Length: 253
Ligand code: PGA
Image (cartoon, rainbow, N blue to C red; front, side, top):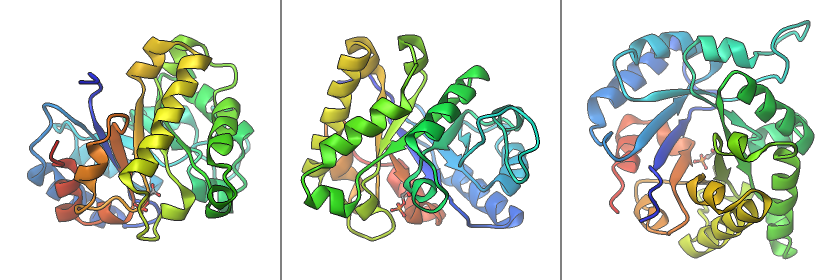
């Protein structure tokens, strides 16, 4: 037993009006019963955070933002700051998602600034890393992960690192239906944990939850979660329907 509480996170991306988001979270609230031994997080779009937070007032389901800026306030039109998310009741923010890296110019450096800014207001990051198909085919997967970890975690001490959650999300598996095999995912997760042990220490590495993301579905979640270093899932497409996300949360060990 690892002693790490599994964390199952729904990333709704750019889906749902406020009413749709509230309806879905109410359905999840009724449908999910396994809260004793697992943590459940939903990341709605910014526009729905306040209403979803109200709907979750008496629920163990926790709230995450999908992104943030690294400054706490200022002339940054269109951006949302860590204190704003904290005041809305978020516990986590997804940082460095590959869609943000790919389409919105996110870099290891901006990821690092965001992680540090979130720590300032006591918010945990769900820090995403992962290789592209090209990088995997060129045999560079582990080098890419090492570089992303080095850049993203620059300047963090052991205590700060202890507040993070990592998500390994191979870019080629996101939204494509091509899940990494349990063995491919386990290999990457074990590498990440080893890297964390070297960078920080064994305690930090053993405590850190490393989620897998990329086409997680009801029919593959059990075999993924059976891997010793997979501590949860970051789920996109299959989190948009209550029945499939509820089944994912209810994974069988
Ligand atoms: P997916 O997305 O489950 O639709 O592949 C995962 C993610 O982007 O976090």
